[in-house]
Image (cartoon, rainbow, N blue to C red; front, side, top):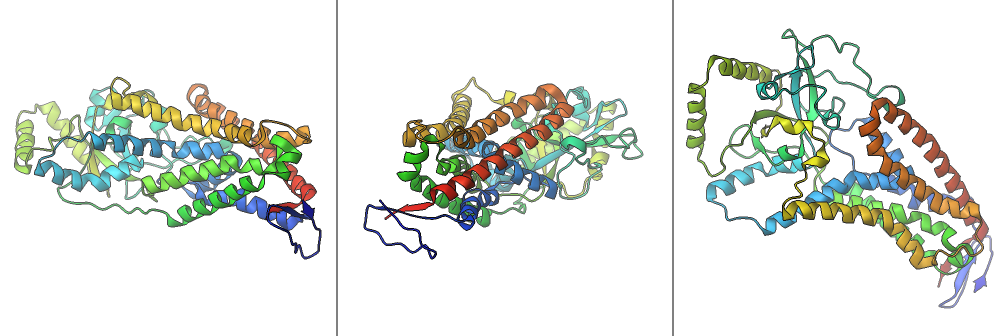
Length: 457
């Protein structure tokens, strides 16, 4: 090995040699910017996210790359499921094919969780509109809290009074919570769609529909750039760096960022991105038969209306008045209101091969995300400490392990301890992990300055 220290950092060497030069703070800044900061540009933002949410997600992903990976896992799992379903697709009639093609923009938006449904409640928290939710005895308390979303940017006009984030990151209680949103005495809230509703979205009228969306080329390019630089950092860690620091080598810190950028790139290819949420109206328990003609569907609806009693007629009129309060609805969604009582993960059907395969894909992706950094570290270092210090090893593994623990426990804190406990946990985790992250970056910077910058020629 030839080591040359020159002010201009100009070196000469023969093939196979490792050439090192004295590192400067510029080299430290370059390593941090190319391997950590560029990662922020790959973060996938959900539909309707506000500026505050976007900033928070970028910061969370910088300190917790596994958190950013978890955000895009549903998109990738859904793509795997759709590919499998396409292999087993049954023959379609011409009418079914036409209706499916008309629904494609709606189905893409629904898979991206870009749709919201509005439900009206009386002063006691009981659902009043849509009428089917009243009949199903839906209340504010028995709807799973994961579906509530009164914060996101939503297209069009609707009677929901938006909430906002308050102290400790908890959604603040509306000051006018007890005040009805309109003369009917109802208060309205916006909800995500449960999983069984996602494939049951249809246009309001026959014919094609277009929803504003885009495949984010900038994020894709940023992901590719980050993958390239992180891969180079891992490659450069071989030899002198690992011989000196073992599994405390600073180049290994890029592994979770490399994986997340790869997952973000896949997710960006699978589904388009939506800047806003879109409102869909509730259509009923069961969607129209896709093989039926328009005349047959209209005749069926007319027959149902003729057999309605006075109460059913009154409920239908209330629903029509309710829908008039919403401007910009883009479709009708069908399904059982009882699905709103179950959390999202309970809607996976594990009793059929597709459901089992979907769960297996989830376990595989999560397993890779958790285990891959340790597999790479073991493959490259054998978990040998070499001459690294405890501080240097903690800078690599401590940051990784602490971040994984925080991400794994996050959903349990939210679901079982409540919003206030989650807010306290969120602030505490941000302070602790932020401190660990800053300390780890400073340690990495000192390691770069001590070891110099090396390349194999």
